[in-house]
Image (tube, rainbow, N blue to C red):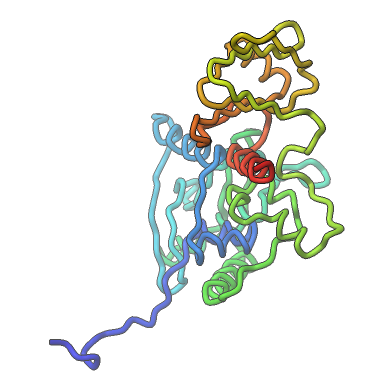
Amino acid sequence: MQTLEHLEISTKPETIRVSALHALAYCPRLFYLEEVEELYTQNAAIFAGRRLHTQLEKQQEEEWEELFLESEELGLRGRLDALRTRDGQTIPYEHKRGRSHRDENNQPQAWESDRLQVLAYAYLLESVQGITVKQGRIRYHADNVLVHVPVDDAGRAAVREAIQQARTLRQSTHRPPVIDNERLCARCSLAPVCLPEEARLAHDREWQPIRLFPEDHERQVIHVLEPGTCVGRTGEQIKITRRNQPVETVPARQVGQLVLHSFSQISTQALHFCADQGIGVHFISGGGRYLGSFDSRQGSIQRRIRQYTVYCSEQS
């Protein structure tokens, strides 16, 4: 039997993922939620990014070499999107689904979080392979732009500083505050967990949100409760047909949401019309369980579900 004296206890800190540094540069609160509280969500942008990488891997003409690296000395690990050789120089590549940042002269630049990510991969490559990396490159596919990121002493220092900040946050018991740039929250997959608007409003009652959720409006929410009720369209109106009752019509401009309970039905024509008019359609089981939504408006499905759930709670 081993005693405590014979047990080897490792004091080496766990290496940090390069993707975690990307999250840290985007928002320290996002880093904390993922790396410390281990909270993760998926949204359409994340799945689209994964599809992009899968498509790139399948392209026969694409020079692709994915590589996993880890350096205990640097305290970093990560999997490079692609590693290529140009004119005798080893260059790490990152592929991004979105658009590049533009400077005051409308010239393409890397977003700060993307810049730190490719610098971290370059520094990690130098540490593991014992080579010098002079630049990294980021391909932004939405506007088909390739951005060159020079690797210099200032860039390496920025990576070391980010690693130290990440280690400090890992040891903290306090979730970082919501960042000042509200627009980053609108694109964040963890916004339904982070609740940035609620956090800002709790600290400042005069604060006006940029609206992570659809704006409140005076259009009605119509609940169709009776089983067998049919919802259709007639002209520019929503038509509701109930058993043994006169047909009811409501102008579409007055309707914001349709909530269909139990075994009520809606026609394909009415669904097309609701999509065109920005009317959300929600389905509820006979026992009151939320089943799903049909909503063509822009925005996160998770956020819409949460908004609708809050609405139902207020009405009950």
